[in-house]
Image 1 (tube, rainbow over the protein chains, first blue to last red):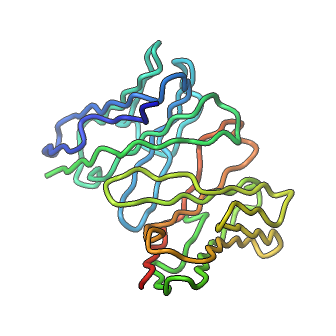
Image 2 (image 1 turned 90 degrees about the vertical axis):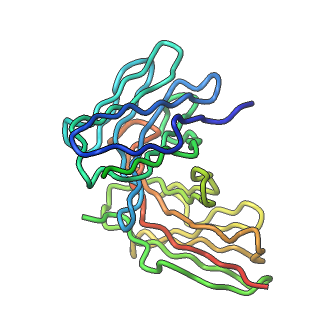
Length: 114
Length: 115
């Protein structure tokens, strides 16, 4: 079974631009979550989608948004990029949305904002 | 406000010895804890978890201990192997979130197992 895939793997943008990252969950998984990883901050939760609905949101500004499609694929968008948005963005999928379900992570998209 | 803390950024252990990775948390609402392992250029991989109703959970060479009164958990790897060299993240979740995700992660500990 294929794992979680994320595209693109690497991205360079300049301040003020916007970016869209894509995540394809494991087949059959309906829950997709996004995390931001920066040095010194660990992984920070961005948001979670289940059956096309956002179920949970982390403490990030409104410039960060996401959506989920009917095939469970998800996208996240960051508008008006800032230097501090440079990070590894990780997507994770799980079968459902029960609390103790294992989340499977993709390899991440590394975003560099210049 | 770092609610999950891994105070040791790195740890070096000889092959065959025990590796002990520590994690502290401040939020008493956390009731489910996990450890993930991450190799370079890969996403984190789930290792082991523990519910707050237990104080120990084992899975092969990996054991997680939870001390609720001290708000502390640890991951023991016995015996350590070179393939265990990776960054280990501690994570926690609380019942009020109601979902599997919204994990709060620590900043990670880089484990190096030497020959």
